[in-house]
Amino acid sequence: MKKYLFGWLATATCMLSGLVATAQQPLQLTGTAAGISQGKVYLQKFNNKMFLTVDSAEIKNGAFSFNTKVQLPELYGLTLDKNKSPYYIFLEAAPVKVQLDSAARYRNTRVTGSASQDIFTAYRKAGDPEIGAFIKEHPASIVAAYVLYREWSYRLSPEQITAYTGQLDASLQETEYVKTLKALVPVLQAVQPGNRAKDFAGTTPEERQVKLSDHFGKYVLLDFWAAWCPPCRAENPNVVKLFNKYRSKGFTVFGVSLDRDKESWVKAIKDDKLDWPQVSDLQFWNSAPAKLYGVRAIPANVLIDPNGVIIARNLYGAELEKKLAEVFSAK
Image: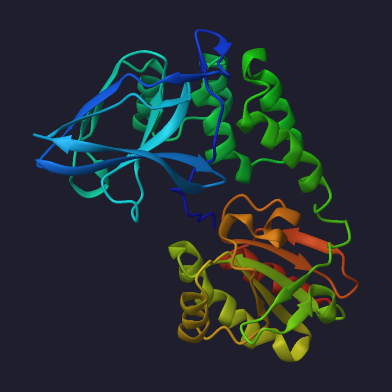
């Protein structure tokens, strides 16, 4: 089962007409906010799937404009509420107009003047087309680099990531997307099955420090999750079932949460009946253990044998149940 939470983006240096821009340039962004006569629109920049508000504009008679000096072209977000996910928009060094729909998730928002946004919209409408074909069609588009980074990297092997980044135009090789992907390759290679699991220490809800290696000697499922992640919460009952089935035979789970709110994390542990060691540095996508294991989406997991050697990655539902049955029937 491949269920992952999407909705967070990373900062990227973008490309227009084959050139990567590095200078700060003033936006030429104007727009309307349907159904809103006054208030504010927030311009947000992304860094490792987290939002950072860089400017705001007053809505006057339903209209707004930005001439903020920013790096262009680049991917930004527009929102009427800083506490909710924004509308993702590729802005370029050209006049861009947006009709911002104030309804749920900005579903009917319209953008004109951004060629990159047109490519992005077409990609979405195509329903997740195969990444190789998309890169072949748009090798010099920042959207291709973004899609590879954000929506495909979690399902690709290190070798595939290297191959696909190599197919992107030279103008994209110094973007944050591609540089991040290239740096990810050796991290993923180090945590493939057959390699020894990387040890780390984490903080429990009770503020105790525990190590992953404290649990070697058993089969350990290193489980990356978060209270805010619906697919993680949906998978938790399956992990609970398997934990209870095999715990007496030498199986345990070591949970790593990508939460940032301790109260929500602790409540989810209780609500989901996660009766195994749990740690978190409450750093969201900056989680140190997640970076150590190259985790790009959650849920994610690593199955480790009693000797501390990785034997499988990212098994869920029936696949995880089958693997554990094989492991313990062979004992």
